[in-house]
Length: 160
Image (cartoon, rainbow, N blue to C red; front, side, top):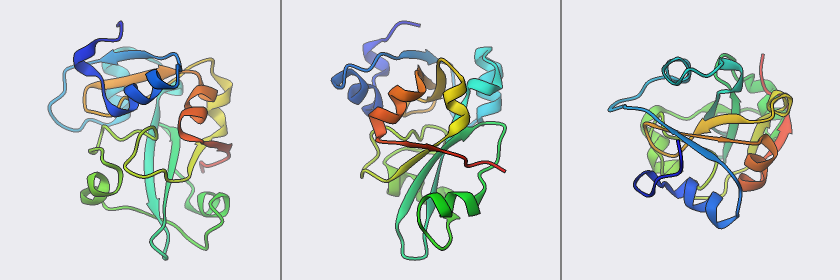
């Protein structure tokens, strides 16, 4: 679908401002559905769909990880990459308070604060990947390096 004014999110406005090309994919959604369901709904292969996860360190610092929807974040690898002793997933009810986004609409671009972002290195194996667009019912398709540029992300090994 072409970019439409009515579906612009903070993430999309940032990408526009940075002149980063992306494509928006929308679908009907009133409540959280996981990335696998979104991929199936939109007809995209799971390999190019990525989810955004937010973690917290014991010292209350937040870190963002972007990994394939079919994979699980390896918290030990993640902590090592973030130079932390350990990390834990934030509680679902904290997502909006910490990121400014809601569950299912969380994306690494345009969070309330600029948290360190780590993108699974498998993203580089694809010409384009798809991540949440910043709200339920919206996905953004863009080049992995473009995502990294938009959120100052670092590529590394993050999954089990």
